Image (cartoon, rainbow, N blue to C red):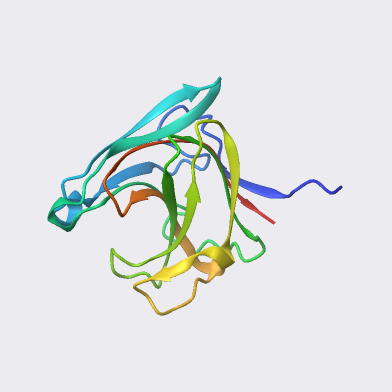
Length: 173
């Protein structure tokens, strides 16, 4: 059997907010639009594996409802990943549902994105999210994998406590 080909974006070996290419993971909450959700990004070791940990209280007050860890990839330039099938992530969570959001040059408004949902478990798991699974949110243009700009891991849409660890982020064929 042929080994899966991946393009590694982050393996958390930096131990801090930097991904493999030096880009910084950043925390965003609904506070940017008046919400009251609280979040933190920390760097941890879970079951001997280094990870970035997104935690926080997602609250729906004041039209809020999200906590996000986001990584701008390839600086301000287009990142053509059209040769890949989708996004691969190794996560350890608290048995809650999370989203992955992708942004392109076409997502001009802060609320626009391409979204896919995944279920976390309280053990390490590898999740594959095919680009075809990402649904446009408040944008009419379909996702163009030749124009990815940002990848976000998001706790969103309902009141709950977020606790999700990311051990690896990659693209797969």
